[in-house]
Image (tube, rainbow, N blue to C red; front, side):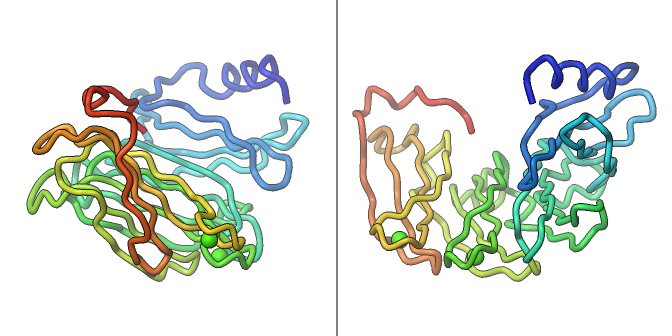
Length: 236
Ligand SMILES: [Ca+2]
Ligand SMILES: [Ca+2]
């Protein structure tokens, strides 16, 4: 689908309302388009995703999480044996329960809701990763604990049934500007978890990354570039 059609879709969908966070457009696993955003004025119904077929026909429109959520992220994957839509965000008002994700089937039916990490986390990202190479995606959640115990960067791995597989703090509390990525570090077809950042306080050693097995075992720590890059780096 070209940019003209996407732009036209955006105008058709969002005219008349205001939207917070970035509106994102992403492919699904079956040649459809996933659009997500947060409606913050007008009816102000909060986070929503929509699915369009290749001809631009609206197939699914679903309000998700609740109106107290910010930092919406949405992606399509196969967290069960069929396609699912995963939406994540931070509940920063109301009950303020922190980061959570929901899994929907491709028809827009809610399969599960999970609050993750804890309410002291910010800069939370949700991505899919197949850590055991079985064709079913796991859900990788990462962020920084910046309040409370302030333990810094951490990640969790969840399966599509909502079971927590591992929780692991990474790098150290002086790291910011996190990036999370999947990598087959040893080349045997099963992905490991990478987490990179910049040590912007304390020892100020600059950028570094770590590689973990999916069970949380640390495989590698590597500093990169040099400490002069300590104030650089995009936010995820
Ligand atoms: Ca898997
Ligand atoms: Ca591997």
